[in-house]
Each structure stands twice: as C-alpha cells, then as structure tokens.
Amino acid sequence: MKSFWALGLVCLAICQVANSYRILAVFPLHGKSHSVMTHALAKGLAKRGHQIDVVSHFPLENPIPNYKDISIKGSIPAVVNNISANDIDQFNQINVKHFVEMAGNQICELLGLPQLQQIIKNPPTDPPYDLVITEVFAAPCYLAFGQLLNIPVIGIVTCSNLDWLNYPTGNPMNPAYMPSLFSTYTQEMNFLERLANTFMITAIIGQVNYYFGYQDEIVEKYFGPGYPPVNEMHKNLSLVLVNSHRALNGIRPLTHSVVEVAGLQFKDEQAPLPADVQKWLDDSKEGVIYFTFGSMVRFETFPPEVVREFYGAFEKVAPIRILLKVARKEDLLPGLPKNVMIKPWFSQIPILRHKNVKAFITHGGLMGTQESVYCGVPMIGIPFFGDQHVNVKTYARRKIAIAFESIQDVTAEKLADAIKTIVNDPTYSANVKVLSKQLMDRPMSAMDTAIYWIEYIGRHGATTLQSPAIRLTWWQRYLLDILALVLITLYVAVKILCFVVKKAGCFVFGAKCSKKESKAMKAKKNK
Image: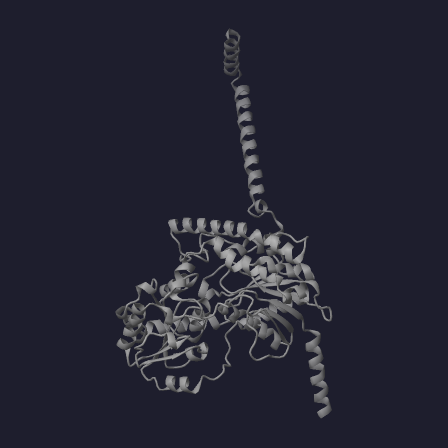
C-alpha cells in the first residue's frame, strides 16, 4: 500500500513538472506599491509549480521554491519612504512628457544593466523561457523581450486599464460612459463632462504615444535593430491582467485578452502581528483608526502646523485609538497624543481585518483602498497625486469614505468630525461590507483567474485571445471606409434619381421641356 501511494506522488510530481513553464518576469518599475501586485502574481506562479525568474528592485527576503531573483536593487533609488511633503507638489505638476520620461524612458535605460544584458545576449536554453510577463505602464520597451525570445508576452497593469492600452489591444473605449484613468468623473456624465472626457482621453493618448517614440532608440540601443516601434509592440500582447473589478471600477466592455484580476494580493493566511500591536488592538475597546500614507509619503515630513492639526484631531477622538505609520520616529514632531501608536511598518491586511479597526485614513492609493474594501473597512481619504483623487472621490460618492480635497483641507475639527462620523454612522460600514461581498463573489479567486489565463496562453499560443480588431487599420475599425462607401453610394443614387425624375418629367411634359430648352438655346445664341 505504501508503495502505491509513493508511486502516486511521483506521478503527480511528474505531471506538475510536465505542465509547468519557465517564465521570465520583468518588473523594472521601482515603486514599492506596484510590486505588491506583481510579486504576488510571481509568488503564486511559483507556488503553482512554474519556474519563474523575476527581474525587480525588490528581491525576496525569504527565498521560496521555483522563484529566482534577478535583482536590480540599487540601480535607481527605490520609491520607499522617500517622498516628503515638499515633493508632493512636484508630483502634482508632472505633465505627460515628464511622466513618460520618469516612469518610461528612465526605466528603459535599465536595459543596459549587466543582469538584463545577460538575458538579452545569452538567454537560457536548458530549458528556454516559455512566457514573458512584464508590467505595462509607461515602459513598453520591455515588450521587446517577447520578440527577442519568440514567446508570448503577458502584460500586468497595476492600476485600472490605461487609456493608451485600449486601442492596441482591440479593447472598446467609449468616452461617453468610460471615464479617463486621470479624470474624476463617474460613468454617468453630463454633456460637458463627456466633452471634457473625450478631449482628455484623446489628448493623453496622443501625447503618450508621441513621447513613447524615444523608446524606439533605446530598444535599438540595447536589443539591436529590426524591432517594430514600441507603440506597435503593444499589439503583440497575448494577455493583459488589469488591477480592476466591476464592483470597484464600474461595468466596462472587455475583449478576451483583457482580464480583471483586482485583489491578487489578497490571501487568507497572514503572518501574525507583532505581540505589542496585537495586544494594543485587542485592548482598544472603543475602536482603532488605522492611518498610513502608504509606502512612499512620510507623515513625519509635513510642516509642524499640519502635524499639529492631526495631533489635535487624535486628541479630540480619544479614547478611540490611532495606529499610525511613521517611517522615522526621530523626525516626528514632539507631542504625540497618548492614544496613538506608531510603527515604521504595518502588515496591512491583518490590521484591517481586526474586529476593533473602525476606519482607515489613507492617501487613496489603489492597493490600500482595495484592501480596505476587501476587509470591509470604511475610509477617510486625503489624496496627494495620481489616481488617488479619483479613488477617494469614487468611494466618497458610494458613501464608503469621507473625502478631503487635499492635505491643506485638513483641520483638527474636520478630521475629528470625519472620524466620529465614520465610527458612529453605520451606513459607511454597511455599504463597504456590501461592496466587499461583491468584490469577493467570483467564480475563481483573482490569483486562480490570473494563473488560469497565463497557463491558457502557455497551452494554446500567443494569438489565441487577441482581438481581430488589432489587425485592422483605424479607418477599418471605425467603419469609416464603409461609411464613405455608403455616403458615396447615396450621393450617386440621389443624383441618378434626380436625373431620372427630370427626364421622366420632360418625357411626360415634353412641350414645356422643349420650350424651356429652346429659350435656353436662344439665350446662348444671343450671347
């Protein structure tokens, strides 16, 4: 009997190896928040038995089987706890050109690193790579790995779908009810909002594609000649995994190659909290407000007058407790109220899932707000830049959050009132729990969905899910050639009809037509 079970386990292991893929995952963006989603997917694939080589700035602290780090840590400064209050205004002033330069062209220059050049010039052959997964944001230069290795490319988008990614993937985009990623509109827009949304989407797509052009030179520099323009490489994407969900982002038409997988970072098994944090939460009978501005912005860098407003709010809501993330406590303004605990880092989901946590004060980052919805915790949003304004306003409209316009809008009285409202008004908690149920009610988990479709591409090939729209010119896709033919046909038909009617009239009323014609001939002769 023992030998039978041993044989079964061996067969199972052989089957898993036979169905596994070797995957190159390239995540060159240096934002810690982006890595939450990308690394969760990489670890999920490794756990499923696939061999995955991960190029990133964030190597694992504890290695796991089937997962190989190709670290580029230190090649550029990681965006972790290094944005001060003074830097926030600079982020708000970034235009499309600076955005592509910062998050695209500079990231593409990392292709010159020895770690990446080793893959480009001497890719492994025993076994070779079967698939490439790369983050699709502002550096489409990395899509060249698909052509280099002649294997399918899978993109992962760590926000909701990018405006400039819809057309090259054949995904429908209708500005009438699909707001731009950078707008604050809902899906129910009035005329002026639809007008502004249309111009915004058109302008952003045009500018982004124009500034992407510089990356053509970078691709030729590091990969060599013979590669198509980077804008065309988007069409080679076999699958795009997007960090969105209909419950959070609304109903949108999606082609089969675009799959929503919001919540890849969600998991039931979590490491236990530190003993002092666990006890502090357990003892907080009046409730806890969890407060963090994410992995980038440092609360302790704000001007003293701003920090004092927060301190004042914390004192006003006591005995409610505040759990506050402070990267460097030595930089924090003295006078921290006694009902506040600070730590340089918190394991976010276990805290949000604690029964005594009543609200989440957040900058509105997508990962954090998704986790708050997942755990059924209402929010108080204080946005700074990027999609944070959109996220906060969206949740405020759904009455699962209270929104501030900016950090300058925060006063001790306003923040204390917002905390008391969230804690005492059950509507917010009830609404977010309903939304949480919608988010989690799926045929498969986000991880299982992502892995299924990745393996599907591995089994069936690069073009299996691609929309036929990507092989049409823009005038064919929008039926402009058909419209032109219809208009020309109608014009010709009307001209023929007029001619026939005129001739028929002359035939029926021949005398009158002949008199008119004779008069016309006489007039010509007189001239």
